[in-house]
Length: 441
Ligand code: AVJ
Ligand code: FE
Image (cartoon, rainbow, N blue to C red; front, side, top):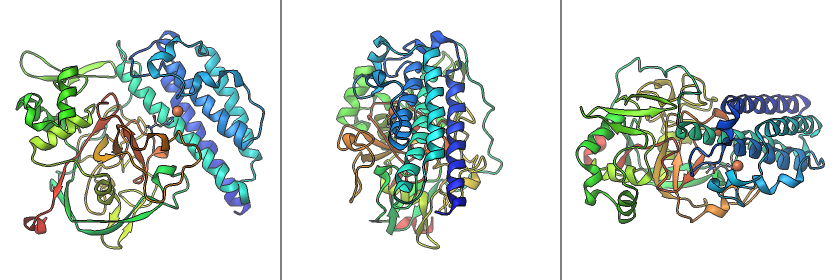
């Protein structure tokens, strides 16, 4: 790496660290009571996420990259996600909001110091540069988690953002044919790709058809109104048992009034459910039941990635659906720029080479795949990021949501969660096997 390249890397890391901290501040510069409250048993109190962000940054940037002495070794255990369940964290002797703010500020100063001191060359280049990318993404991931906590809390709005854009052109075809054949899944070259996205490997898929847009609220409401939640045949055994046990009737945060109008609560505001936005806050089980009702299925993870990345003109897999350029506001609804998904068709410039829209941003998309390593997977740099979850009770989600930052998403990025979860910004799109009649698509 030339001096110029090292400087560019330093500037990029410092900028992204600053951007993630600005976002963390928006989410936590609220009343102290809000920060220490357990808003849902599914989530940590916000003040835990804040100090945990600092704790991970201390571990990886201050101690590991920087080789510095620990600032607060006595609190490591409090902020170790594996030692305490989310619902129990509120009982711990956590840092107070002002202590947590001061702690993350002190850690950041030392992390920036470490960034200036790392040679970012030779033996240290790959390790140190990755550590900064990992910590940027880690803070952004917890910011998305904190955004989900904001959505779960009761009370009036604390966050504000402009409405998303409206589609300027009519929708294109509803389905896209993805030709059969090999494509490259995963990556060996994306510098900040996490271990589970690696290595690049070839996957040969039969032709399939995928929806050009995510399933919308209007489409999903039709399923609810057709009695989809009461039709046992649409659900798997596990899905049905869950639907009965917790009394699922509609997406989380939806209610229906006496006139039959659907309403939703969104970050403290109650409003009619907009029909043309991708449905959000549905579980994997609900997505599967909808797919069966519609006579289709969820895409597998490999199908999702091929639809997003494969360029039939070159045979190459792109970094993003639209190409290799970093995400811009015209490509995708990311980064909490809007506090909701955008109507389908709002991002024509973000469509994939095959013509599939809104694969990045808006809503995470459930795939019909469990959480497994790619062939040739090597754990890096710690087993608790992905490895310990492989083979567990998880389904994969792809593409990121309106609450995912651009620095924490790529077409290769893999997320996973329990199939019952729906406090996350989760939606889906449908796929089906291709038949002879689809040649004209
Ligand atoms: C990859 C989103 C499942 O939030 O649990 C944050 C990311 N790992 N801290 C999560 C993560 C450690 C993780 N997900
Ligand atoms: Fe974490």
